[in-house]
Image 1 (tube, helix red, strand yellow):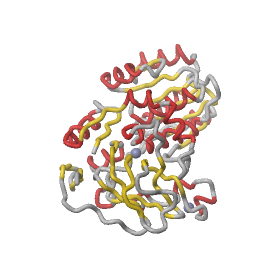
Image 2 (spheres, helix red, strand yellow):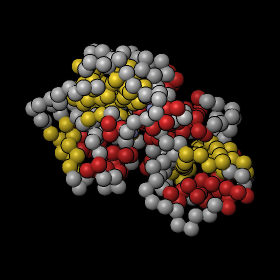
Image 3 (cartoon, rainbow, N blue to C red):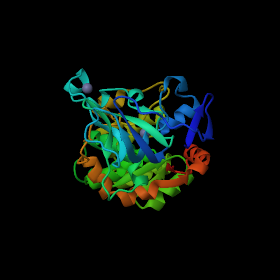
Image 4 (cartoon, rainbow, N blue to C red):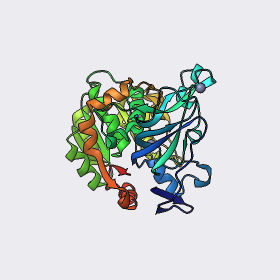
Length: 343
Ligand SMILES: [Zn+2]
Ligand SMILES: [Zn+2]
């Protein structure tokens, strides 16, 4: 069996353990086909998240079900699946208040995670962390179901009207996938802002955006030229840098909307809240994943993935298992927008 082991101190090692993981009650076993590297995986490596508190490594995977335990519903051996919450209990406080994505901790849903050739995923009558994958979506694209679902949440929170101009801060997978969805929803111009020139060039090459600019005066001038002097209707902050959230507030027009769509580590020194009042901004959080998937595979996110798979392909870089350490390096450096490892 192949495994990417995460060791203390942010070290990675390729391992080939003899034993396959044994099936547990309430879980199904998945033979992992591909697993994507998420920003939160990199946060584990860099020590921004505590490895000792995490029970899994890799949550963006696709694969084939090989074994199911008693009580798993609608999931059968041989089924192609992707990871993501698709059924919740319906009776807890979160579920009853329209926040079913908070129903249960991910720590309880997968073990040891998608960076191992075989992983367990929870599937019971009151919770499932697997969604069926239609034939039209290949294994590598299917590994993006979780981030696409998170980006869908961002797009929903952006709440755009047809023709709205959108500025996206951040040239990572999350901002770009959200932008692709917003395009399908009828956004007007979509401008992406990124700090690193190499990333800007990569984003430009995808041809997805009306403009890709730097986070500087020249970039702001392009934004004003396209959106008008008052700024963008909707601004999405997907860099994870707290100070950029302040900046996003100055890029939005009067009455505009700012979506805070990142995991922030740190605070904003001398945060100026006045623009929220003076310019009547709406600031809204978007913490993916949302509760959009269904266990029968019929959800809007799955349909969207079929529609946008050509655009998704433009941001994916595929690595064989033997090159997994390089994949993590490239994800860290930004060389790969979305690195996906094939098992
Ligand atoms: Zn993720
Ligand atoms: Zn619940």
